[in-house]
Structures are given as structure tokens and as C-alpha cells.
Length: 78
Image (cartoon, rainbow, N blue to C red; front, side, top):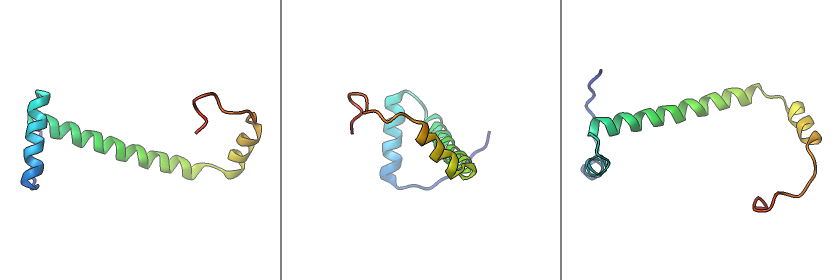
């Protein structure tokens, strides 16, 4: 385990303490989970950008051309 010291506004620290207490977790647990979620989201975006860069416009156009031209399912109109 690593120990980090961070600085943040008092109001944010207070809200985090309240959130941790209401969730029944420690501040360490709350902040570790939040950092993990943020890292996961960031890595996912990077991965999707890499995959998108490998795509070919003509393949996308062929996929769309092969898709049926039908009205949307009710509830998906917008």
C-alpha cells in the first residue's frame, strides 16, 4: 500500500467525510474506489480511441449500407 497526502478545499473534504460516513466506509476506501473508477473510465476512453483509430471508413459505410432501412422501435424515436 502507498500513502498519499493531498490538498483539497475544506468544503470538498467535509463532503467526502459525510459521504464516507453515510456509506459506512472509511475515507481511504471511498477515495480508493473513486480513484479506481476514474482510472478505469480514463483507460476505457483511451482504449476506445485506439480502436476507433484502427477503423476504416469504407467498412463503416458498408455496414450502414447493409443495415435495414426500417423505422425505429417504439420508444427509440428520439
